[in-house]
Length: 605
Image 1 (cartoon, rainbow, N blue to C red):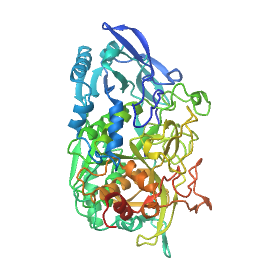
Image 2: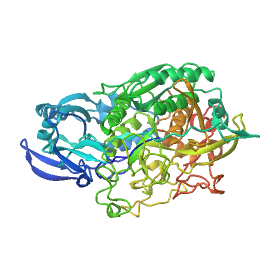
Image 3: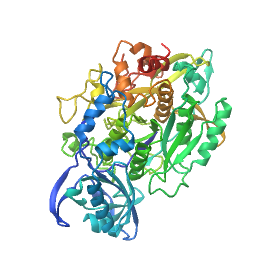
Image 4: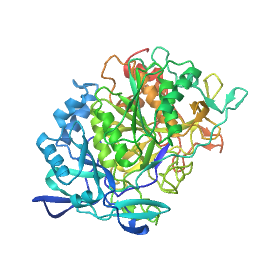
């Protein structure tokens, strides 16, 4: 799984279906004749531990994303509930991006003021979201500093040179800007180390790799519904030609049809030469389409890198894509946001003297929550890996790509975002043994599967009444906090168990929760293809929790609560144990797709 090991400033995450995260801001002197706001969360923590090299090159180009508050969060919350409520007349009446913009978008006049302010400051607006709430912007350091009343310096820390603003940005209050992503070049997502699994079968138990057909059997995926008419999306970066070529080899090897592929780039992305993430994108594409071989299209939303600003743009591009897939997968993450006011922020364990940018939390959650609420109102679902560091998030960092994201519980009891966000399905990992024909011999929770209590984000309404969800929020012990995983699928153990893929034209193995997430995206595509309503089932967690908390649970999920054969003890990811029913490691468990098609779609019962 791709995990961020570089974290931005701290910010409160607000409750689920209601308004998005509120910026931690303070009044500041008048700006351009308007009242102004100092957006204090947009300041990288830990700069005092880095070496300040002085003012940055004023001509260095910065890529930023400005988020503007939409005017009716209460209306969005009410509609979100109605379109996912089977008793409502609006059930499954999801909005198109254009309809969302018309009903909930930022007013045109306000949008024009935002654009004018950005342009007058010498910045180039490269893209504006359909709802006029997200602005992709480019500009040099000199103009960014002048417009935002900040000072950008060059720094070095742990062998990495980067630039970062040394003062919190100041924005006109009337514009409604609540978050700015990209003011430093340190925040970045990174790849985990991979250890190829071995294909090992002893007698009737195979601990090695599974094939698509194995998982069709293990997860009870009916032949009548294989994703026809549905599209599936993958979030990634860099070059895609080799990824598509490997997909074609994979399809030929396993006798699968060729799924049409479309590549979509977010605004401002220009360089797609990077191939460091090829193995990750091979897992994502081959796992998702392996589960939905008849899908109408695989759509790759690829940026030029995995900086926070680019990933935010990728999410917005998918959300605004009127002809895009209703489901997508993201195999990356970083530590959830920690409120500045939280008592946990002062705890030495959770706020160690790490190099710059390695403080816990990030400033992306605020923007992504708003984007993904829109996606949910459009009936879309993002599946995301819960991580490969167990009941922790990856606070240890050694390099931009690779180290710091290995299979290691790093001791910080926080979850990974975006899996922890309320409008995302967080997917945990399991180790799956079959008999060589796809029949399950054993399946248990992976020791390094991400999962746990988010600590700060109240449980969304769809989690209400879920047995096993018991932990309160750190900031308010009277409120139960969101827990992940929501569901799980095979991750393997990144040593002896995984999924067969093709990489660089040769057989290889996919593993980690970055396998689990696209597997679920593909299986949800399959479930969606059985739905008679062309608008689909909507944001998946509403349906998954509805059936998971019902008497049909055993028909819809395999309850992952077995023994970890490597220890002989109940499977655990560190702080959490797999238990009967929903638990913090594997959620409701792994899917019985035929049962979900019956209970969600009313087909094949």
